[in-house]
Image 1 (cartoon, rainbow, N blue to C red):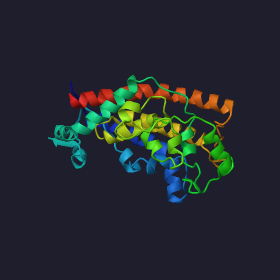
Image 2: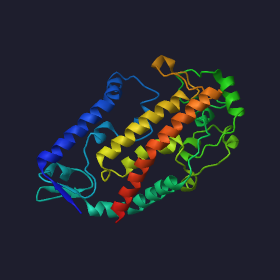
Image 3: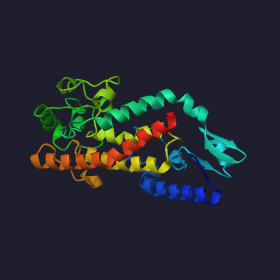
Length: 283
């Protein structure tokens, strides 16, 4: 079933979307103009490749046609016939293998029991026994020796390949799992901060098919998760206004786990919506 929206209706949705994006990105864009790096919020634009201008474009999603939408003829993934824009079936067909892989990963993660005992130690394992820390402008809260002691006194169980691949060489053997890209659909689970942050990545990889409201919901989740990720990291970010989540203490572990569960609850319906989107695209 398809829905056709007149110009006045869909253009108002597009305007509301752009306004929402501008609010979400205001701080990032202002810092970028000042060339002022930010170790927390820049991540969404350095690790993930989607640019602010790409986020500002409104996409209705499958099954929605837009009248008087000649502007969409210039956008990849659309066809415009007699002024009415719709998603290009040929583009969906060309990307079917990618959509199928994304669906497999998301559905497997959705069905798997989430785990909540990692305590964010992946960030600590990324600076274990090395002078080359990723955020060199920010001090380690416990110093290098104290950071190493935290890693050595805990069992590390990171299940996410794209976090594990940044572990230092001495830290990798300490992880209970050895994730690979090939094992990602087998190991990824819904308690993992990075797996839930990556819902934004999969939403962007499905653009322009992803409805923009779903895309921004995933973006906001990723932004909030990134905040906890860095609060629980070994870095001292107090000057930026971030209170540490001291995962080396029982109280910090409890705080981290409670937030982790909350994010898993927020991520679950978004992951389900992305699976349903894939199913709709694949027909």
